[in-house]
Image 1 (cartoon, rainbow, N blue to C red):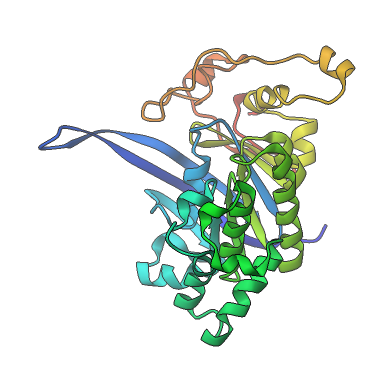
Image 2: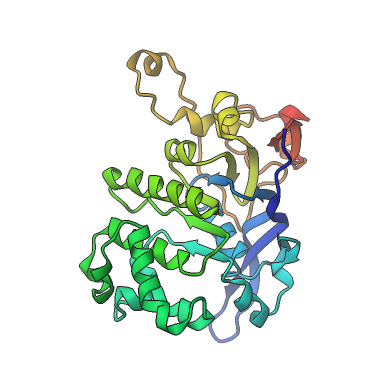
Length: 327
């Protein structure tokens, strides 16, 4: 098997948000552990899907990787350069290689800017192309994402959700990036449009040699676009492996529960399949359980789960899991 080239390596990443009390004199009383000791690698040219329930830390992980949030601890290695250790000025130069597509593109656009200005603004700032070529490059990017060149003179409110997301993709591509964090880029779109956007991302990846971290909660769509899948729960990665393996043989009880909720388009199989229903609510990330984060809802909980945190380790070639069942 040909060795793959690591592009992004995350080592012990933590992102805590302080919880304060008091109006005049505020003091920290706790930390919201949004991302808590996460480690994984994204290989060049692949799409790593990151899935989990709302509030589990997926988006925070993506935003911390591209330094929209500064990490509390850990290393973010992009081609062996630790992004967490770069100064603001150094990170500005690095940002041309790392881009992000947001869940709600309209909220990330300046409504007073035309589409042409939205796409070209960063190109002009970073001098990606000569000034006289900015206009033609902007029109070229619109064509690349399936939009007409005359859209450059229009404003964001004049477009549908799917068109706005394509504009967001064009804006990210304007920097000629190597790595893109796709933060739930289809969750706000109609189902009929979602497949179009995912297929567009796939074509662009092949054409431009892009690497994606694809954040989503729709497991069926993640299966379609991803090469590997990482499952996140309460700030931690609980399982990571090849997409075929994780759908064929999930090993963590939380992954098994998630997959049991994905409908199968075959009435006979669906009627025989056992649905795993988790009891209780997700604990607060400011006060996670002692031991395994999942022990309060796990149908296979053991005494050790309430005492000791499981190690995230390789249980089979390329298959990582954090569970005492596989210790």
